[in-house]
Every structure is written in C-alpha cells, then in structure tokens.
Image (cartoon, rainbow, N blue to C red; front, side):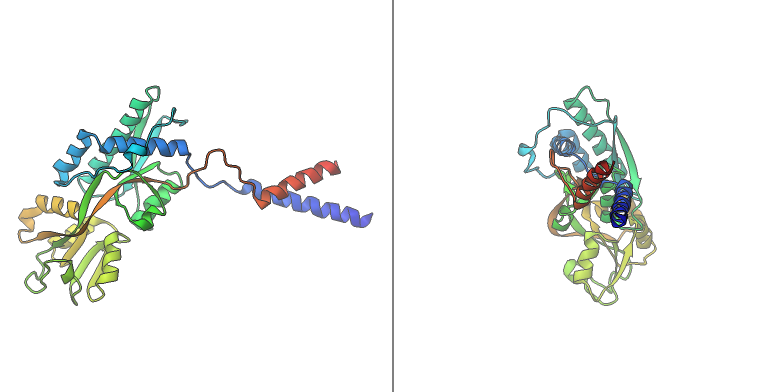
Length: 312
C-alpha cells in the first residue's frame, strides 16, 4: 500500500511537471495557406500591371520579368485575416530610391487585395529591419519567421538556397550583377570584367552576407574583401577613394553613378553574369490546413489527465 501511494505520488508529480512544461511552451509562428495564396496572387497581379512596370523601367532602365506561375495562382473565396493592416518590411539603410519603391509595391499589394475583397479595410504598414547583427537575408527571414512583418518587400535576389528558407512571390524586377570601378588607382589595377577581380592588392567592397559576398569569397582569394553592413558606407568609400571596386546590383550602381557623376567623373559601371530576378518573400512556415499533429508529449499529457481523473 505504501509503495502504491509512493507510485501514485510520483506519477502525479511527473504529470504536474509535464503540464507545467507544456503550458510554458509556445507554438512556432505559422501562416495559413489562405494567407499565402492571397499574397502570392496579389503579387502576381501587381507585377503584371503597367503602372508597376513603368515604375521599374523609368527608375532603373531595366524591367520586370514575366511571372511563369501567375496562371496557376488564384484568390481564395475569402481572406481570413483578423486585423485591418499588413506589415511590409525592408532592410534599414536601404539606398534611394529603394524605400520609395518598397513603399509603392506594398501599397499596390494592399490595393490589389482590397479590390478583390472590397469589404476589407486594409492598410499597408511599412517598416525597416535592422540587418547589422544578422546580415541582410537572415535578418529579413527572421522578421517574417517571427511574424514581425508579413511580407519582406526588399529587392531580394532569388537563389536556390534562399528559396529553401523562404517563400518567394513572383519577382517584381530583374537586374544583373555590377562592378563599379572607382577612381582609386584606376590605371594600376585594370578591371574590365569579373575575370579581373582576383588580383592581389585589389580592394573590393561588398554587402555582408549578400550574393556578391558569396561570389568574391569563392572566386577572389587574392583580393582584399571589405564586407559592409550598409551600402551607404560604400558610397563614402568610393568618393574618398578607399576602395577600388564595389560589387552590387547593377541597378543600384547605375542609379548612384547617375546622381554622382560630377564627383566620380572617371568611375564606370560594368554588368556581368546572368540576369537575376528580385522580389518579395514571406515565411515558409505555412500550416497545412486540416492537419493534426500529436506529439509524444501530448500523448503523455493525455495519459496524465486520465490517470488523475481515475485517482479522483
């Protein structure tokens, strides 16, 4: 009898401990398939609009790719959202004209959604995400994974590795990789293409954790690489002649040089590589509708509850 009491008390204690642990756990953030479909479909509609194509073409002289998946996208019968706003985010420190571009895209997404669901009173809240600690893509990915923002609208280059860690919408623009050759020792270090970048003594600046960072890490072991948290630091280094080359999005480089030609008269931009697309993404933590997941701990909790009821 004594042993039975001890056993019962032990099981009761274990059940109490398990209940405490489970109650203290929070479920991971997830979005619904309904939310995913609405955002994906709205983005596909926006990028096909003449208004949006004109924004990209007049700003960067490049264009918007055709979305191959648009024909398979469709709105659900309703948008199951319990708030009257969507949060869009981009990297803090983004250069002109990108903040204007990001805000415009965010507003057009909301306008498109409201046109489909007129009863909704949605607004677009646009915010910045600090990328200094984690780096560009990890910081934005973290923001959508935690629900800090709904859609990362920064002009994120798509890659297979990024596609495995986030859910991308139809691209809203395309560009090429670019080399901005500064005025520093431009007759000593000749750079006419990406093949000339791997030179001892050549100082190359890139955005930290960017695709350009990955490129120089793999292909330019002889060069000196400076990894910057914000592009604006690179512009100052160009004008003060502290770097030979800045690698970046060709659209960014052309736009900056067009605004700073008087201060960088012999600077030049060259494009290289294949065309790449850029656009927005959401979290890939998407709940499967109607799925039921029973964990081992949940089964244990059910057993404990039945045991405690029996003891009563």
